[in-house]
Length: 492
Image (cartoon, rainbow, N blue to C red; front, side, top):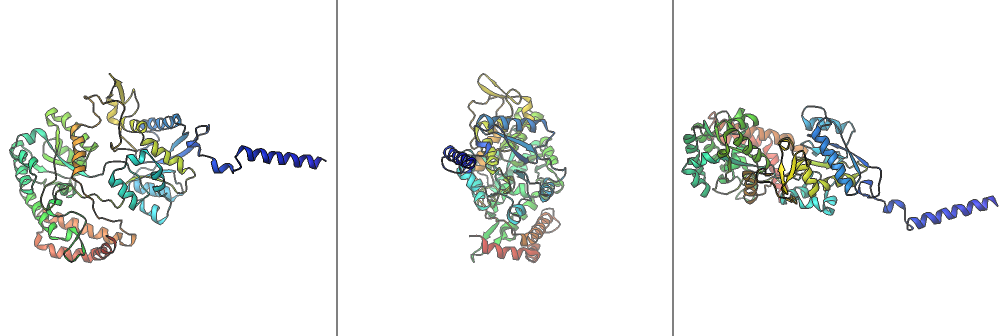
C-alpha cells in the first residue's frame, strides 16, 4: 500500500512538471539571466580591454553605468574587469589567454589572428549581428565588409584613416591656398607647400610620425597607388610599391625633402613630437585620424594659438586618381571579441548591443549626466570633466542621435572634426589587401621592412630612384615573390 502511495505521488509530480513547462524541457524556453526581465541574480561577465583598468575611476563609472542601464532594460549583468600586466597590450593579453584565463569579452589591439584561426577560441559574431538592431545600425559599409572576411572582431569606430589639416589662418594668408581647395592637384599642393611655409614662418610644410604613411594620405592615389595590389597589363597583380607609380612618388617626396618642405627629422618624429611641432608653428600641415583625433588637434591648436587657429581639413591630391589612403577591408585591426568558451555568449553580445543603443552611446561617449555633461536650457552642455572621458565601445557617430541638441559652445565634435568625417566618407575607396597566412607572414614582414628602408633612403637622398630596379629584385628575393604568387591566387 505504501509503495502504491509513493508511486501516485511520483506520477502527480511528473504531471505537474509537464503542465508547468508546457510539455517541453525547461531549458528549451529558458533565457540567459542577462536577458530575462524576471531574473534576480546577475550574470557575471569577465571583460578585458586596454583602457579599462580596475583602479580607474572613469572605468568604474562606465561599468556601473552599463550595469544599471542594462538592468533598467531587464538585462541583469555584472561586469568584472580582468587586469592585464603593464607593457605592450597585445603581448600581455596573449599571455593572459595562453594561461587559460579567457574572459567573456575580449578587446584586441593586434595579436588576435592566432586565437581566432589557429586556436579557434573566438566566436563567429555574424549570427549575433544579423539579429541585432543597434550594432547593425552602427556599422559602416567598411565594417560590414571586414566582418564578412573576418567575423571575430567588432569595432564600431570610424575607419582608422588619416586626413591632413592646416591652420585656417595660415591657409588664408596664401593665394595658392584658395587654388588648392578648388583644384587640389599635385602641382598646386607643391606651390601651396612653398607659400604656406614662407608666409607663416614655418620650418617646413609637412611632418609625419616616423614614416611616409601620413604623407601618402595626401599623395599616394594621385600618383596611381590606388590599392596594395595593382593589376598590370598582363592581368597579373603586382605589389604597388614595386611599380613605376611608386618610383614617381618617391622622386616627388625626395624633392619635398631636399627643398625643406618635408620635415628633415620626420624619420625620428613620434606622435607627440609631431603634434608639438604642429602646435608650436614649426609644421604647417599634419595628418590625423578623421573625427575625434582631428577634434583633439583642433582643440589643442586653438587653446594654444587662439580661436583663429582653427583647423581646415584638406582634400587628397588629384592626379591619376583622387582619394585618401585606400581602406583595408580584410579585417578589423582591433575590436571586441567574444570567447567561444564563454557560457554567456548571448549576455556578452547584449553588452555590445546595449552600448550601441542611444542610452549606451550617451554613456560611452559623454559620460555621466551631472558630471561629464549637464542638461542646461534643454541642451547638452559638456563640462570640464568631459576632457578626460572617451568612448570605449562605440566611437562612430553613424547612429548617434541624442534626444537633445548640444550646446553650441560645447559640441561633441568641432566643425573641423565633423568635416573630416564627411570628406573621408566622400573620398575613400576600398583596398584589396588580404589577411596574410601564417606561413608567409615572416616573408611579408621582411619585404615590407625592405621597402620602408629603401623609401627612406630615397627620400633623404642616400639613394636615388636609379636604384629602383635593384630594390624590386631585392624585394622579390626577400619573400615578395612568394607573397605576390599568393596574391594572384587570392584576389578575385
